[in-house]
Length: 71
Image (cartoon, rainbow, N blue to C red; front, side, top):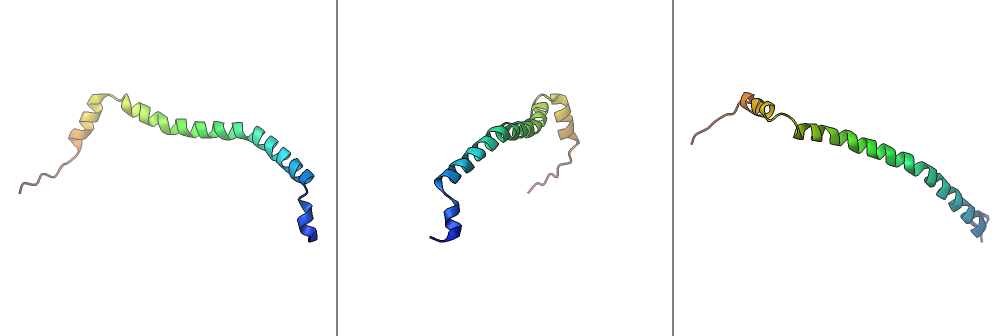
């Protein structure tokens, strides 16, 4: 077997996955908090729009110009 392939012995692979496990264990909560903050920032405008005053929505619709065509 060539020299470069003997680097990955079972003991070294076990040590590698041990460190990967702990890196993910400490990094995953921060990643999930950032993802949750991003989701909340997208959700807040939707919630605001759903509770908006209906008169304001109708007023915006009245100000829109519509082109009426009769055939």
